[in-house]
Image (cartoon, rainbow, N blue to C red; front, side):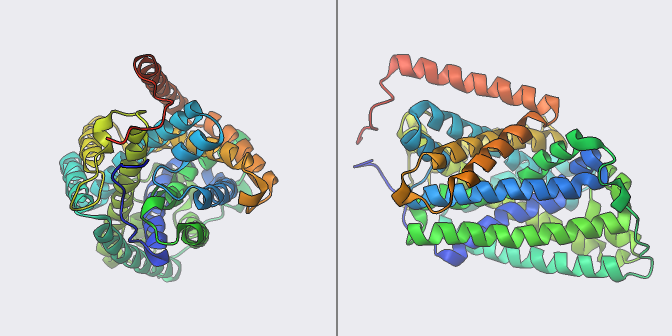
Length: 424
């Protein structure tokens, strides 16, 4: 990439962990538990455990690869370097489409908690445009704001769990005997939907060009952020199931609001709404940064139009890519619902990590940090979860993948995109 504009290295370990936490904490707790409960009932706890195992495998593969390739692009770069240019393109395209859907899901989650239903769509669009502007003015501001958001959300979650379990009307439900009530397929589908919540650590890897001491910082940040999130998800999932039960959770649009209401602590509803809205904004903030940087990497290699390879000369961000993303996500939020966005996002992200695991499997011994069995388990997990997602999500994902393949095929015939990127 000689001669091309690069991104400044300004993020330390705390910044990277905060961005990873901000990407994950808004998704799982405030958005994906309800569709997971609809798929598996109380079995979502088993689905959560399965999703966690797959996420750990993917996290270690991402950390191992990011240490060798500390540059923007994540598995797009890993697939190109370790497998083939086509594998890299499929990883990058899957990431861009999956995480674009995630941006829409987070904007809709924010609007669900922050505004009356009639104003939800306009408020979601306003959130997208506002946070795109924050990213435009530099990644250090993104990291600083994300730290504040993570602290606020963790405090709100701690208070919510406490009052949910100690409220005067708390009457724990009995769900332990129904863990397998909706069968293995339902559990696997819930795992695929919940995996959407764990994918935030990819933001750390895709921002590898901006992290200080990347070979040391990226692996530590990924493992640290994921470990914290695993503990939080488990605590909140058990609490929600105990307080409101799997049936009510499956139809809920705001599970934690119902949690405090069922415990007789309605005074906490505004607190929960503020926390949920803040969490969704934090996730959206980090998502915009991650998608923009993968688009930047793909454009550098002409897998996307060269227009997206621009880096702002003052603020050091891929501003063309982030502006385009804001426009596309704004269109999505007015045309899709939250649960559809989650399913489609999971499809793209699981394919992305499938290629990440395949890439890590081929690394040489001197670049390996974890045994190959971990990558094999990740490959199997991603493959199983992606085919058990809702059929509508699979069909839409396959269609958009075909569009990307056609685009790259046409580009291949017009330009030699297998050649190194130019230095213009």
